[in-house]
Image (cartoon, rainbow, N blue to C red; front, side):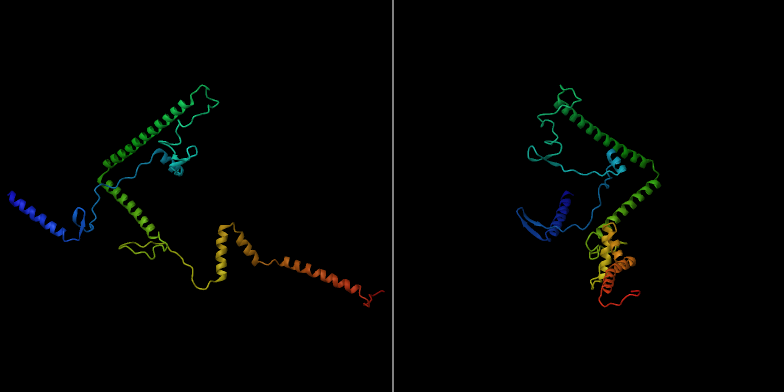
Length: 281
């Protein structure tokens, strides 16, 4: 029986090696090796998709108040040493022992050791941060346990409805991501290669200007619209004033230009020799 099993195993291994070495063979330092083809079968996921990390107290407060965290650089330039050092932590710029002189505030006893006080304050801050970290972990584990308990209490129909809702939410997120990927190129996905079964993005169009001979009036109007958006509308008001003629102002200007000419002509007629005498003289 053992000899039969050994014979079957030997034949199976021999057939496997024959199939392997029918592939392209590459010579290496360790000997000849066969280049295996690339895998074509997508293996299923062994573990479930990890759930999003629960928010801490500060993250919940910032989300409710609309506060956005601004990430600061880890390294900061230290003017004393002339090199970049960490903002905090090992060899950070917030080290207490680096200061050789510390000022005593007016509201503190002059005999107080400020170095010992600074070290004690720093130790207290570290302990407080650690306590907050442990509290956040406990709250997160409690929330996870409460969610697991709620799932265990659910009926099969409620559990199935919850799973369907989660799948629909994931589907919506995937569709949004796919649409963003489609329109992420300069042509808004017009000249990109389409994937089989890919849905077409709706409501996204890009208008291109005509390459024919430009219409100067239309071009002027479009430029004024853009300028009007960038300013407070003064450009549009100025262009509108150019189109409107102030008739009263025009008549006044023309009368002012004609009046000196009439006065000069009248003066010349009175002082002219041999002129026609007026009546009564």
